[in-house]
Amino acid sequence: MPKLSDVISVLDELYPPQWAESWDAVGLVCGDPDAEVGRVLLAVDPVQAVADEAVEWGADLVLTHHPLYLRGTTSVAATTFKGRVVHTLIRGGIALHVAHTNADHADPGVSDALAEAVGLRVTGPLLPDPTDPAGRRGTGRIGELPAPEALSAFAARVAAGLPATAAGVRIAGDPDRAVSRVAVCGGSGDGLFAAVRAAGVDAYLTADLRHHPASEAAEAAPVALVDAAHWATEWPWLRLAERELAGAAERRGWALRTRVSQLVTDPWTAHAPMPYPTD
Image (tube, rainbow, N blue to C red; front, side, top):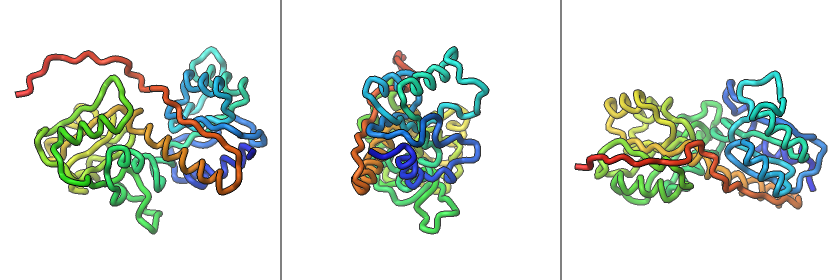
């Protein structure tokens, strides 16, 4: 079996830490670099339920997309939610590693996985990384559908392609308008509206769209908006990362087992529909 340091070296090749945003906190959170790793659990969120799953399955490493401590801390006491996660992992001999915005910017990365999940053929990044001479890395992706379809049909495609959540999928725009070229961004994406407008796409799929930015975007340009749950738009990356890691392990002759957590860690747990006029 490889050591944790060996597995981290592979993850750092796939998702180099220098690609992360300056405000981000990626890399190893806890774990002994000399410890052996035979099982890797992949999840979006480093929450207690995921830590418990890791212990139950016998994982040696948990790879998550979201950081546990994004803004730092002065304590990992088990009296706090995050401290309990740390204690659970350390007691179980389980390491925690984070690939966040470095995985967003990678090629392939989080938005590539999102595009794949909803049947889009990626043509390039939405916001290219100026340090990438190939022009493939960057934030978000632009993709094309196999054939034009109504916005309502595309929204149904998104709902079917992503893991189910209580919030479902919301749209802004004429349900009958034709959609062919789509911008996507896994996770919170309403900070990219300028790039979306410049891309000349028919629709934009992302998460966490706020009222005012979405309203202003709808008025500024005829781009339909498709808003899914944050967790759901990033979950497809777990399958992509699993394939990449498993391939690297096979090439190196490692006996490494991987597992994608099926736990729904989206914080919204129920949805109460309201009567709404459709005419």
